[in-house]
Length: 223
Image (cartoon, rainbow, N blue to C red):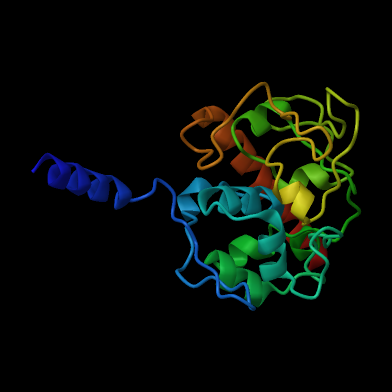
C-alpha cells in the first residue's frame, strides 16, 4: 500500500503543469505546434521588436536560433537580420507572435520613422531594469530617455562592448544583457514578463506621451 501511495504521489508531481508554457516543435519545420504565450498587456507603446522578442522567448522558453528561424527562415540565425520593415515579413511576424499588425509595424525601425538610426543597441539603464526598450532609442536625434532623463548608452558598463541592434540568436539569448559578456544593462536582475507593474506610473506616462508626440510628428511630416 505504501508503494502504491508513493507511485500515486510521483504521478501527481510528474503531471504538475509547468509555470511557463513549453512550446512543441514540428521536426523538420520548426513551427509552433501548440500556440504561443505573449500577453499584449506586457507591452508598452513604442516597444522595440527586440524587446518584444525577448519577452516572447522568455515566456515560451524558446532558444534564440529557433525563434530567428521562425521569423526569417532564409537567414542564418547567428548572422541575424536588421529589425527594419523591409527585412522582416510583417505577416509572418504577426502569425508567430500573435500580436496586432499595428503594434509590430511600429516596433520595426523604418515602419514609422524613416530617419537614420544607431546600429548598436541603445538603452536607458532604468528602462532596461523594468524590461523596456523603445524603438525611439535607436534614432540618432534621441539623446535622453524622456522618462528618466538619462543619456542613452550603447556600451556595456562591464566589458565596454556594444551589442548590435539585430534579430540574431546571440542577441535574443541575452535579454537586456550584453551579448558579449552577458552582464545586465540594468542595475540587477529584472522581470522580463511585464513592464507595466514594475515601472512607475509617471514614467510610463512620460514614455507614452513622448511616443505619441514623436509618432504623430513623423506621420505629419510624411504626409
